[in-house]
Length: 460
Image (cartoon, rainbow, N blue to C red; front, side, top):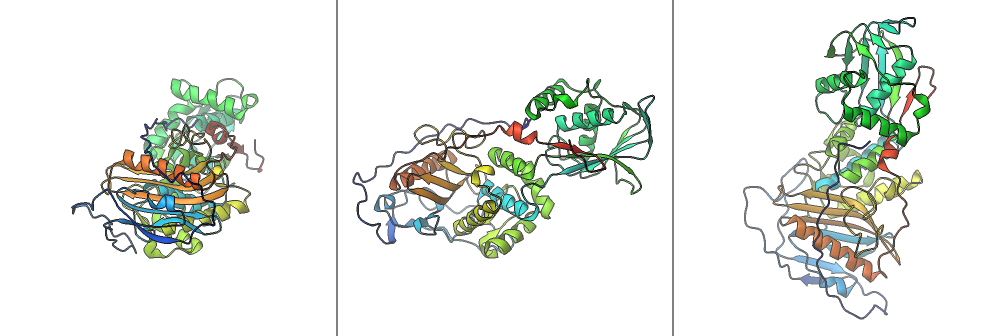
C-alpha cells in the first residue's frame, strides 16, 4: 500500500478574471506583442540569487514586466504575478500564449517529468525492480531449517512491509521457517523509503519474523493480499526466524539463488510517484541512470533541448534546478510522443486533477470540469523566494493544449490561484473545459502488481 505518503488538502483561493463577453466569431488574430502591466514589482536584490548557475545554465535577469504574446485578446489582459514564464501551445505547435518562455526558472517538482521521461526512455514502462534472495546453506525440509545465511540484494525503491512478508511467505513455501545464520543485505537495499541500508536491514529482519512484526506491517500485508488477490498463495502466517545477526555487506559470487521478488511495473511506480510527488522515489529513479546529470543528458539528447536551457542539480526538483518554459514544453512533447509508442498517454504517468489522489486532488474539481487537466505540480515555498509550477495537458471542447506555468518569487497560494484561474480562462477560449472520461485505478492496486520469480523463470 502506498502508505508512507499522505494526501494534503490544499485550500485554494480562486482569482476572478473578467474577460470580454463577446465570443470569437472571426478567425483567430495573429500573435501580437502586448505589454501587460505586472502588479508584482521587480523583487528587491537578495543574497539568494534569482537564478543560480548550475552546470551549463546561464544567469537570467528579472523582467520589469511580463510581456505577453497571444492569439486571444481576452488573454492579453491577464495579470501574471511574480517573476513568471508561461507558454501554452496547441498540439500542432501554434502558440496560444507566451511570456518569458526563454528565461530560466526553478521548475520545482516539474523536474520529475524529466526523470520520468529519462527512465521510461531507458528502461521502458514494463521494467520491474528485482530483489534477489540467495543462500550459502542447505535446507533441511524435515525440520524446516536453513543451515546457512540469507542474502538480499536489490534496488527496488518501493520495497515495503508487504514485500518483506511476501519474501517470508516464499521462504516458507520453500520449506524454510528457521534460518541458522545471518541476514545480510547489500548497501543498495532500501525498505519503506529509508535512506539507510542498515536500518532497512533491521526493518526487514523484524518484518520477516511474525513474532517481531508490527501491527502496521501486518495491516499493510493484509491490505496487499486484498489488492493483489493473492490470498490463495498464502497458507497461515508467513514467518522466518533468524538465529544470527543482521549485516550490510557485499555478497559473495558463489551463492544459490532461491528466488527473485519483482516490483510492480515501472509505469505503475511512476504514476504513484507523480501523483504524490514523492522525492525519495524520484531520486532513486534518477540514480538508476547515474543521477541528475545523467537525467539531464538523456533529456537534452533525446528531446532536442539545449544544455543552457535545461540544467538539473537533483532528480526530484528539490533545491536549485534551472529550466526554461520552452525546454519544458519540448520535454512534454517528447514524453507524449514516447508514451504513444507504448499506447499510453499522460494519464498513465501523471495525476488527473480532481480525480486522482495526490497533489492535484483538490484542484480543478469544483468550478472546473474534473478530469480536464492532467499535469505535474511543483512547490518550493522557501527556495528562490517561493516557487510554484504546473505543466501538462489541458482538455477543452475544441481539443487538447499543452501548457507550462513557472511562477517564482512570490506567494505560493497566490501563484496557485493564478494557475487555476488562468487555465480556466484558456479553456474558455476553446469552448470550455472537457473531461477526458478518465476512470482511475487505485494506486494500491497498481502497486500490488508484484510477483515472485523462481530460478527456472516461472512467475506467480
